[in-house]
Image 1: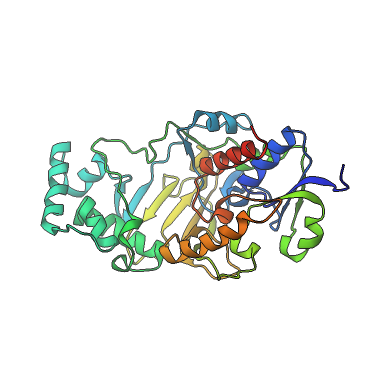
Image 2: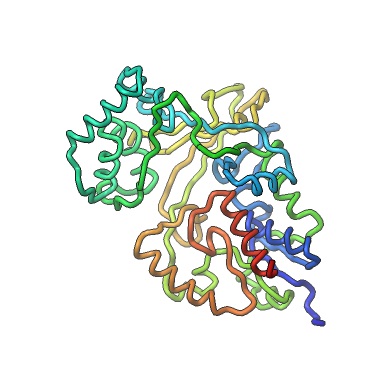
Length: 370
């Protein structure tokens, strides 16, 4: 017997924290979930504007090949049939993504897979890059010059804030090229958006669990730690250890939301702007995620930017330098008693949503010896 009020204090109400809290509660444990934001769900949070579920922190499209995880999320909320089929806008020219026969027809007017393959291979051969030294050379060696110049170069340089020739080749290990007329971006068997938005999923996971919002763990750490037997920490791992090995680096994002009085702005949920001059990387039209028929529409322009301490961290910069620093923090984490580290920030890796959920389920089962 102990005098602790809770079995687990979960720091962070994102997907990892929500799944952990749900699973621990299911096993008879008492959990407290805290988050410094004023809402649950982390970056999956949706804000309802004029009846439209706005993905407040960027587009979140659920996709997985794992039937167990698909059934798991659908046990909390039904998912719709949304299929991610983004379009690229290059100076007013439109191309389907991923690169497929629609893309190749628009670019070269080729009509058969054989013609498309021959065109790409001729450009690869002409470039004659045998040992790619940077991202530009790697991309051209995979898809040729036309696709690189129109659909990769400008977008990638905006996303990373660096020239492609200054980015390492390993960032692009492969590029999906399809010689079919298939605009489905993901190959995963299961794909969709929660009907009514991601808040339904997160509220379902946290049903019956105490949640305290607007709570900064680091402002009252000692008192919060004293509430529970164990901590589940999902925040930045370098912050947990007071940045003693320095800051881990991220790319950040700025979102410009605009409510419009027309029903349909761009005809697609996601349109990427792949030229170098347009300052944003894409425009999201949120109503199309749920096949909305509202009188108004809301669009979001997405601007990548350098991350500085205090901004929201979105994409870990998993280069050699940052990975070395992370390994130092991970060594410390492995030796902290009664603290479980999990999720995108604590593990310093980019997770898709199904991967976060899968990671949480694996760690829960391991923790409970199942």
